[in-house]
Image (cartoon, rainbow, N blue to C red; front, side):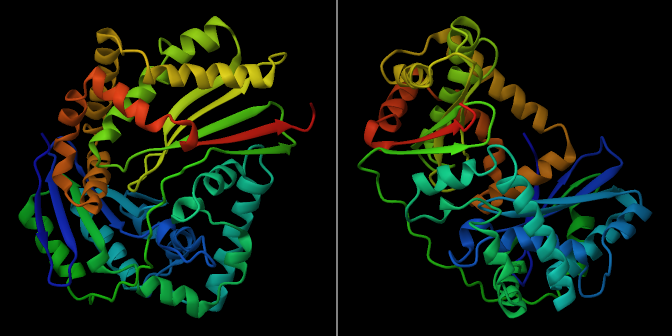
Length: 413
């Protein structure tokens, strides 16, 4: 059980504190309720751009890294389709350095044409290296565009195209920041060697003067129920034929999510999983095969993928994996299989609760979902899943009309 205390400042900033006396450090984690899904479809990649922009300096701080390094700390950030998360770890007696930096980041970046141009070039180069010039780099662009027609999950975090960042004006960038990166759209979590009273006083000191802002989120329409299977075949300069099969599934806090997550582990969670035992080690059809969830907050995807071994017929190998996945809607999960994957999930949760930084990020993520207390209920959600629950969820997800198939073929073949 992770004990924590919570308060809300007058400007709407939610502050959560967890004391961990086993470490001399503290983590300062600021999570904003803004990700790729909050972008306009004609200006995608903005949330990811801001992850870069805010490390280029803020209103009163020209450089974030040097002050952190000077007090023995580290810092980083990540952006997803749902959130943007910044985190700093410092020795506990230097917490004010971290709070000073994060509060000034919230006040605003240095909005200059030169600064925007520098980070624009960095992001566009990253787009080219990771998504345009890297083998399989455009996979998520293709699979998301195939699977989603309405919901903004149809583009990945880096954006639909680098042209959206190339064409972005300084005014558009400012407008996006001031309508999303605000105390009333954020969660501050402080964990580590600090008392709640001290942490709340420090949060009040450094963040209370930042005014709340008008949050302008575009309407996010739910993805319509898919009524017909879709298939896309592309040819790329890659070494191995690959395929991806994606089925629509529930949202992160839906009870069916936990059954789907356990099903993915039964199919592909380790050396004794069904796919590994039967198709990778047994029939030796795949160099790699995996079944996993996209894991977003809104309804996401249940995905199966495989890279075929040389000499394996593409359609035969693909069908073998699809059939192995589809069997889960018809065959019972054995008590041994269910106990094994539940133990695995519980062990992962216990491991994630050891580190003070990991706890900070989890508390923030669950608070963005609506309730930080969910961190203490996850194990029960998984323990309560029955074999029948998994079969029913599999039957609901793994329908032909709910299927999106991406064939990613090698030009060399």
